[in-house]
Image (cartoon, rainbow, N blue to C red):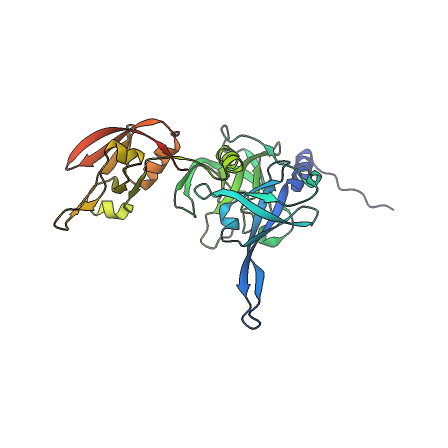
Length: 331
């Protein structure tokens, strides 16, 4: 007598179908590093890390986290059918922890690009699905809900804040980094990037960079090989140094003359003819927004475009001065 096929609920069937439909879009990425064998002195490529990624388009572009591929001498991408291919780094955005790879494969028909969604209208309680390769295991599905929106985390690469991050209780474990976070329609709404846990294992809170941010970075990387952002053209002191002065703001160390801030008259820190340190301007406001630390300044800049004129408030000799500055380009 033939065994009876187990009957799935409608919800279970939808989840099964979503996994089957989207698994071909997810890849496993191995980060290879060159090491010299201690005994033979031969140079060998050995795995130094691994993570997940997904096919972005039919041209063979693959998206993952920057920290997954950071420091790699070579990269190996495994498709869902088990075939392995070399990949090159097209570019990366360390500030948003995203990297774009170019697959070297002869048959692009094997590629199954992910379906893009939007992260502008996400709601707490909305069901989400994470597909990846945790602990090097084959494609694995975890499910949960959006447990928070509008979160902020710091990029592990540059320390710059990433805003509007998605918080989820879907299990995100080592190896899930760079994998897609999907909505119930199977659309990409985020890229799994961080686990809030001392051990690194899932403890109920995971984070994903929203797809709208990812889309902006990836589009620029594919077009220019990098992300171009607006800049003031300054270098500044660590937040702790300014706190010791008893004020809140950004202490300008250098404002090069050819940069936007320098051209507008912002003063950097220097020494006088007697060798005494003369503090530069302290930035305390940006377009009527309070600037207390580097994070505030980065968030303000992220809301601007290249060529925008901004109002900069600085503290100089115990007086507040307002300056009009036209933002430059990071290129």
